[in-house]
Image (cartoon, rainbow, N blue to C red; front, side):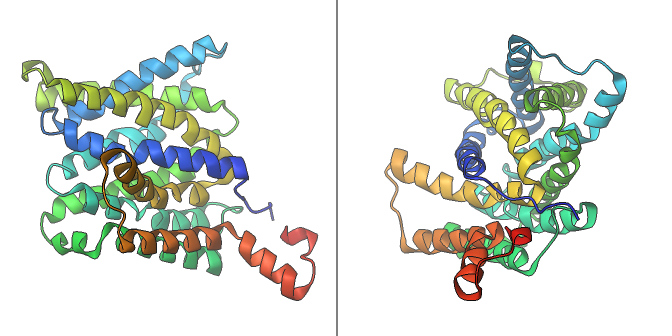
Length: 312
């Protein structure tokens, strides 16, 4: 059996930073999507990020894949990680609140732990990991507020769209591990390039963006930040951590995104940190600790002697 995948301290730091980049994405979408239609926003997000990362790849002395087989293998990853989820979430947020979207998006680790167990040998489900995922998801609901769930059953298609996006993200995490031999920047740039090419005809046919009125400065600024930071920079981190930590560990970012979003609101917008926020964050911390496994190993070593080398 291959060794189980674990998170190093640097992986955790990257995951926290990534959650900050993606935590602000829901707010940016709320600013942009009233003026920029969902498919056009998805195209802009992929397109600007792709240009940034392609420049970065070649400036680093690397290059994009040169054979069709690699591009063909990357095509499903682009569909599962950019084209479909971006479009589904952006469309969903035209009908439901960002709070409810955050809770539904946090279902990604639930899907990931099952998919990774079925499809991998080194990212299997264990009782502590399953319990940790359940506790973490509960923490997200508590932190965001149970009131956000009152709209469950209203705009069902929009809610299903966000849940489907979470499932696609989980699937992409499992599928994307096969590219860990490629530099993360090359994979990220290639995926975003494919996503851009796929979205051009779809957005052009469905929304005819060239006929739309010019968006306001805040909407354009939100779209650019969403593209360059919450997508371009975020994808560099995404593929770097994914190859080392595995799909389940990586999808824990879905629990950290609401935490980052709330802390950003407290720090930048002067919002109030409420008791439910603290309780939810505590539950998420317990869930993450259970999934990480080190507290269990520490307790086992404390009460049952030194852990065996195979369990380290």
